[in-house]
Image (tube, rainbow, N blue to C red):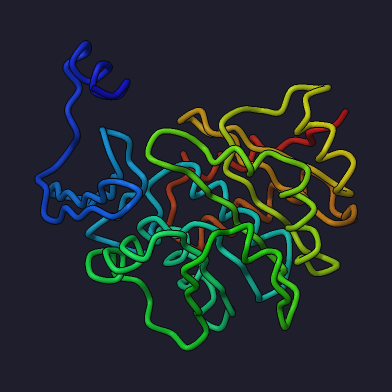
Length: 263
């Protein structure tokens, strides 16, 4: 029995929705469940990997996805790399914001891509390329153009891929960024001063911000070089971007949580 099963039994917490698709691959279960308003992707247990609103498939549901999207306000660039697909929430929103944005999507599990295509309304566009590959292997390959945005959301059923918090991974991402590019990490805590990740971010990047979201996740924004905008200007740009996706005023205040990591 997994820890999630123990937690679920102890607190009588059950996964939401009726299961409409359940497949297995070498990494485990891939489950799609439906509620009246949402479609949910789970890998195992009760943890939601992705959630899609049936009324507006382009509207991100999870707060960390909204926080990650705020990075699009920090650059006018139109190339993006997504490490980790899940149910495609970030991909759909990015495409809705700019249908001409050129995007590469890297997903380890072929079955996740197949399920996302069948059940989660992935956008059909010749601007989007999918790669079934380990993220670190992909980052080591030569690419034809630098990315203005790299979104890293690498999670298994129960935890973050630990490589996402290493200096080696950060340097691989840096090599793929444009001069004005930003790396956007979905992390599980604010890097503590003196920790390995804190020191690596300080060593590798010219500017680092973060945003703590209500769910507890922390989204880290790391730029190759410092930018001229003030924090207040970046927050206002992020708030305006969220309004383009019709995200409510309550959640648009998420932009107020953007702060520098380093004093």
